[in-house]
Image 1 (cartoon, rainbow, N blue to C red):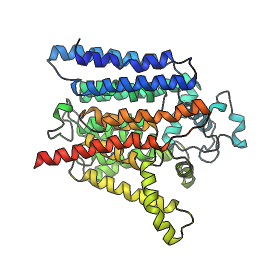
Image 2 (image 1 turned 90 degrees about the horizontal axis):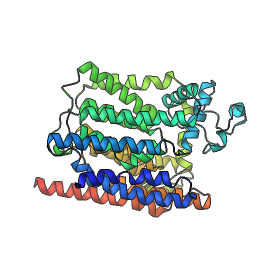
Image 3 (image 1 turned 30 degrees about the vertical axis):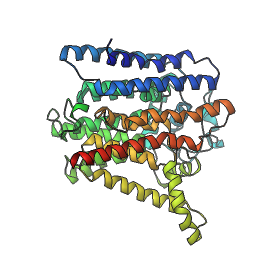
Image 4 (image 1 turned 45 degrees about the vertical axis):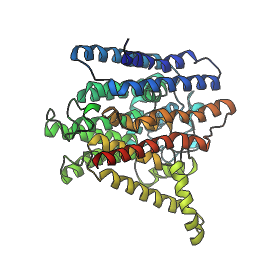
Length: 445
């Protein structure tokens, strides 16, 4: 059996471990899943560069096998208990369906007490109002109107995940299989059911418009076209606008995706597409200034994997002391905005293709956000799927350390992320990026 075949089958280690440990004590189950996820991700890293290599008849059989494995992995994970975020999705959907404003009233408010059901005790952060964009809240309400069950909401997430595979398949079969077999994606969506699957789908749709059919890791070093001749101008515009709407509607940070389509469109086209993408935010749910307050409060109070923010705090401390600032939040926000501007500037400097832009923008964003969760790394996977040599692949492996907080909560009841986890997650990626940059400079010379 070839290395590629062995690596593909090893991807199932994680779904099997998650299924077999479902009834074990919490911390033990998480530790076993963590080890299996690590092994599966190593197999995925070995598989990724070779996913679409070989003669046509061998490649077709290989891709068919890998897609069977991807489907089997999702079927194994679908019945498992999701993250407690899913109960929050159900709650926000009930609130919107009832005509209430989830940005104004947190779940534990007396005003929403009549809406409480059997899922209400499982809601996380009940003292915080909604932090999701309006489009996502409206989608939650659509699911709840059809079926207010955990199974329905989880199926909705998995369908978005499968839709991403289909979109990437239109670009290249190797890209689709790399995404479909990524263990981090499997845990984030088929297992834990995070709605970031909608953001990932939107990013994949933008890549579909921007990348030529058949783009792969083998062509990563060559110039990549910015639009596909197989997609007409108006059709491409519609797909990209819908992709932007999904990206922004799933996470506010999805707005950065507009920069990944800048090269092939005129400024007017970009403005129109962005306006179309933003329009649903004001249509499907109430949106005013107080809609952003819960998000800002949450980011201020709840920080995890915040290595970049810790560095910003270190730089800000002398300035706060010199100016006698009682509340450093404004200064922290300003320095975060400055760091984001630097990331955008560096990302635009050498006019990269759309996949590289997505990797740089969202990868850089993970380095400076005050709150980063395990599944946030899935934002990078569509771009990684089109360039398997990217150093960002290693984030799929190092991010497994982020599960330490889940293990601590299972053992003590307290959700806490040790500071060493931030270094374990991001330092290997920074080293890989620095090495890739050095090697690229040496090759040019």
